[in-house]
Amino acid sequence: MSKIYVVEGRHDYNRLKEIDSELNILMTNGAAITEAFLEQLEQLSLNNEIILLLDADNAGERLRRIITNRLPSCKHIFINKENSTSYNGKKVGIEHVNREFLKASLDLVKEPLNQSDLTFDFLLDLGLIGDKTSKIKRLKLCEYLSIGYVNGKNLLPRLTLFGYKQKDILEALNELET
Image 1 (cartoon, rainbow, N blue to C red):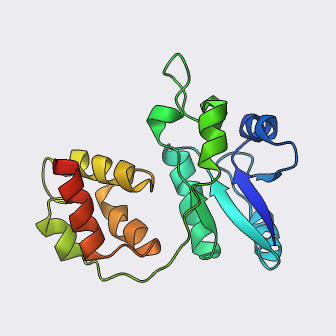
Image 2: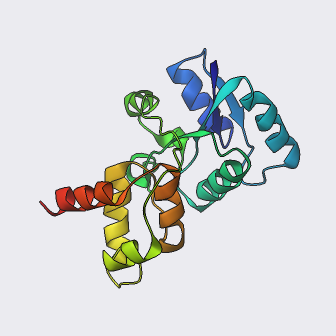
């Protein structure tokens, strides 16, 4: 089964090709994803492994949600904003990631498991949502788990997607406190 990496645009495509010219890469051509592209991904997913490598910004997260809703079995690579911000600090994107870091990130593929015992109330009790410090706690947790930052509304679906359990979250938070 071949791997097909999905990126947002030409610069992301070029950056990946710099690392390995043999990679199979598809571009969404930005945030305006089309029905035809989604159908193409569905067809390709029958015989290939689809891996999303999208920017750590709102547009990238929106694309990730749209594609994941359509292809729940697609895999994910997350690179946080800190590692994907341009030198001038004005842009976020895969094209700005250090080559060596990006190459190493290709081995950090997350698979959807959708087996979780997490609940909204559990996350609320831990202060990951619904508290004035929740955003900071979520940011640290998401970074620690390498799942990309999400807001309070999307935290439970993201954790559930990758099969995190209550014990995993408690262990992660404990590690973050030490």
